[in-house]
Length: 116
Image 1: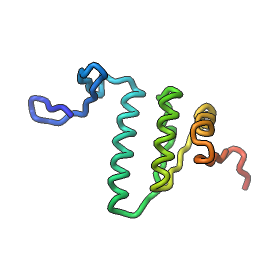
Image 2: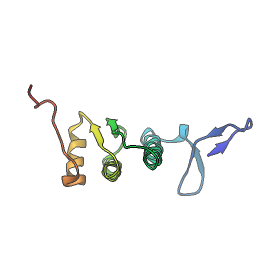
Image 3: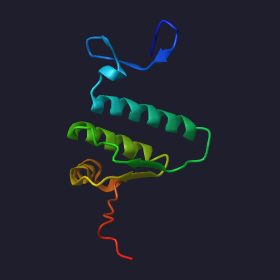
């Protein structure tokens, strides 16, 4: 967190060389990771004092590379131990990564094959 001349807080990151970078200086994927981390932290804090509500994520990893998507999916598996997690995507490669990364921790339902 950094503050400007008007003492307004701005979200920032710290690179491996200890340089500070604003969100506007991050790649889209990195900024999305930061926002996901903040969302999950807020949900975990909420779950400490209230009843669990489902966490719904729609194409959450669209800007993630495969390695980061796998890490994000592992995070969702951890979160699913505390609350229901629903992850929607129309990207087959993310389904494949979920199956590979989460194994039986993920239940995949293909809505295109669901009949009424």
